[in-house]
Length: 92
Image 1: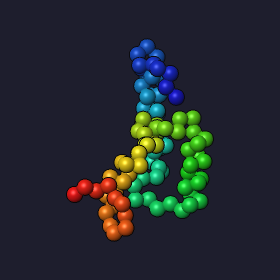
Image 2 (image 1 turned 60 degrees about the vertical axis):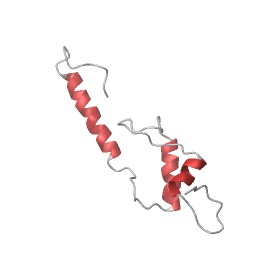
Image 3 (image 1 turned 135 degrees about the vertical axis):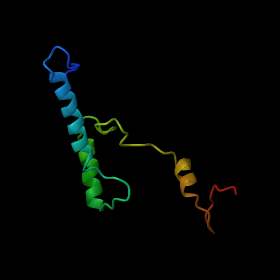
Image 4 (image 1 turned 90 degrees about the vertical axis):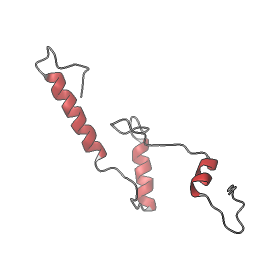
């Protein structure tokens, strides 16, 4: 929506477009999937297909990341699995 105008010399159009962009970004993010949201397998597939169709699937309209890459080691460290029969990485 914004054309890069700063609102000066355009009759306030730039300011209105800036507010409109912020409102549209909020409306786009409001129904997003957040933590502790349960998803069915079908809704996960639909979500990924919709994300794949986005012009920029890597960030929300506010610039927050949508996809974050974790190494296997990072995931193992976060879950700290340590139980019999598991060759865990825990050193404590």
